[in-house]
Length: 455
Image (cartoon, rainbow, N blue to C red; front, top):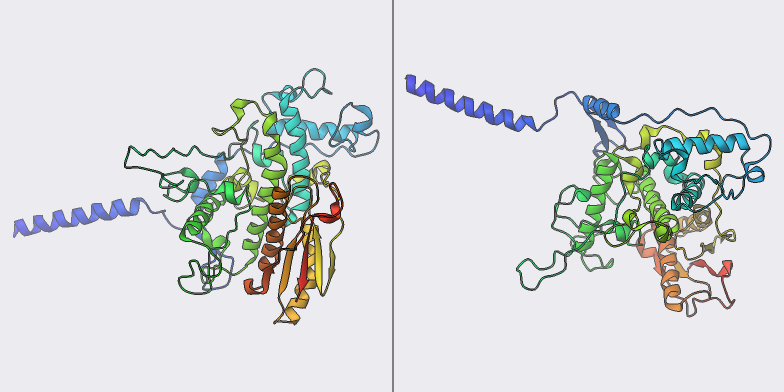
């Protein structure tokens, strides 16, 4: 009898130990769950208040904001030399902005991080970069409100008191294929990379999606859709999931924060916000960051000589709203204005079609140009049998092959905007014109366009 009891005791002890080990990986309740979508779709936000409190305590508080100085009196551009940004602010307000930037980016180094004793000089690369980053901040706050919203961005959003943002990405080193070993080529995956949650997914989903124009469209309307209609493969799905892993880590959320788990193809509001965020990051990287590569010293570049680029974690850093949604930008008028951009004609639109215009060398559809689709979308809704033909064009400046590819990417950008607005893929067709190049020599703004026609 005693042997039986001893056996039972050992069994219970083993079971108890096993259960304790299993529960060790679980979070102690209670947790807070907030519904943010339709019931039954698992669209909810789950937070452990103890972990959230510890995480918030570990984040440094932003520097205190000095009160606005007002914009009366002489302008900075009239008083100081070589002021190429923020020159329309008063001297007092300009100095308040500059002091804030110093606290946001280089609190330990001070003004000397970007300036010599002659503040008008451009000899330090950091000043050249900072000037362009201020223009970028203006662009994000004025032209990308679909993503930045009321929160907005300042230099502190990314820098958090450090000269170099802690969250940037570089093109990774890809091992060369060695024919003398059985390992072979890893094809950019099967490594436990932190960027994709230590999974075996492709470890560089950023070059194609956040610096290129790759599409994130892998779902189909039928079973086993590989190679049917959309031409996507399992590799595209893996790359997409790799990017989604970064989104989840960068925002501190799971998939259902943006997606209806019962219909991932549905365009719920947060998914639309994310769609704009992807295109905003392309604008950041391609328009502002990458063109500055030659300005940086070699020790600031990646293993391939590329500059550090932005992705979701650069601003969000583990929060679904950067800095918990603190609205810092509204206190700095100079960071809210529109950045200087190449002039574009306003979009043309009627019930039969639209003409949308693009910036020099760009295939990003500016928000104000996207409004030119509204009338057409209304006509599509009232005529369910109609389809739209999308044709891209380019100017005569530059190399023909590159320009033709640019015209195609512009057409794809408009097509994506139509699909994001809920138009069925079967109703949107790319129609390459016989001549994509303008008859006007040089950089003609009217030639950088996409024509959308209702048929």
